[in-house]
Image (cartoon, rainbow, N blue to C red; front, side, top):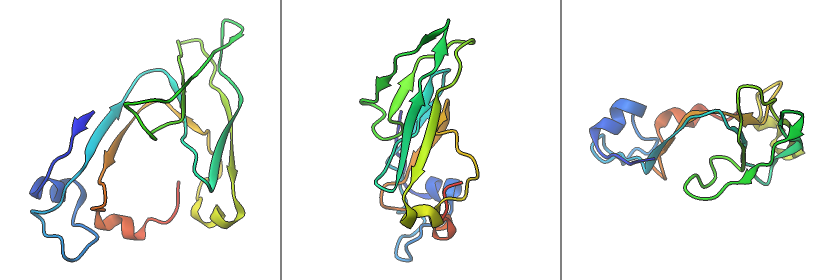
Length: 136
């Protein structure tokens, strides 16, 4: 986990702020989180989209017990399962409420991931988010 940055570097990374009254020197990020490894991380759920683990990963013919997420990751993922090179992935089903279906662009969602970079912009959203309305 890395602390946030301020100023012109944010503009170089993400472009201008979505808000007209924020100048290039006033932009900021809250933090950047790099998550790597072999663990299977089940997607965090919301009120509109819920990810259900139907079957846990299997290793050496036994179910792998997962951990409910705690700090320091917060809401980056809801549950993680340790994994080795022979662990099968979990089976996760995404339940999407009818009113939220227009926000979903995927045809098939695994519901888990292994690694990624998350940049938390706090309330200072980059302008490219103005046109992002679907989870792909």
